[in-house]
Length: 178
Length: 159
Image 1: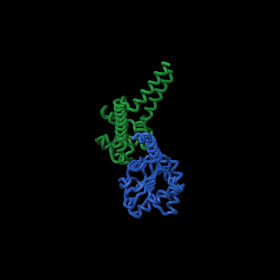
Image 2 (image 1 turned 120 degrees about the vertical axis):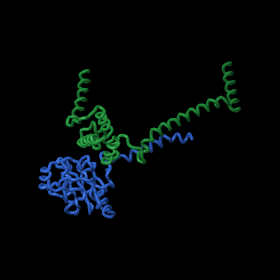
Image 3 (image 1 turned 45 degrees about the vertical axis):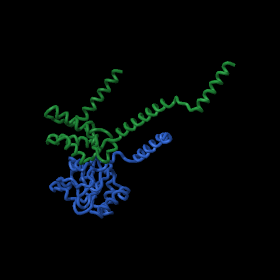
Image 4 (image 1 turned 90 degrees about the vertical axis):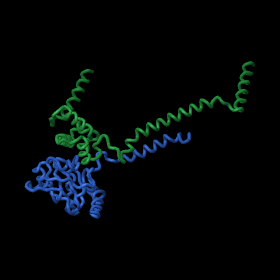
């Protein structure tokens, strides 16, 4: 018994070490989305390109798509834009854009100048849909399956590595099951 | 010294007014205002490392404050308001997480630590009591050895 007590501090240190080590390398700013497994929230917003057209959650029916939250005020969104175009054109991925807390003029100028990777664009100047999606920054990218259910959320820039290592496996699974 | 202290206080106060400068919420009563204060201070800003939405200047905290106010005006209960925000931003926004499988260790740790401490104290007490009663008894062999040593000491002293 006394022998065992001697080793107790070592045991405690080991357990603590394992627990703390598991936390190393985790980005504390990346939170799990509360929406995973739930349908995209209901919304009724204007189309970015056409103020007279209303769009709603039916945009997310029928095929697996990405939902990309962006704004012209967000420098990281500029970083990922070329990769989004690559995804849309080379990989044939359908991406719905959510223009978040932005001005329509700025957004359209941006898309005209840099190219438009989006199959549809939602205009969300007040960030209401973004709020319902639990968006707390940009860029954020969601994987939405064919029945409109959120499968995954990626916080931060999408690039080729993120696509290959993170998004593609989720999309393949969503395609298989959805 | 007093000058430094004063400027520090002024700095603190000014930061508080900045945080609330852009929004002015109207409340019907002081209780409602207090309720808003309590709710916003027990919700964590998802963008910040560790700040409640009452103190944070980030845009998302501003949106969350607006939502808390909107729901209060609509007559929602405190639980409904917190649940609505948890549904969007996850359990993270709660400073006091609910007791569930994932958080049970978090809740149980203080009790486990206290229990462990009590066990150690109990162990020490029991052992010292036992030693207190057993220590005087010497075995016959030990007694013989002690007598021998004492006798030797006596002899040396007399010599």
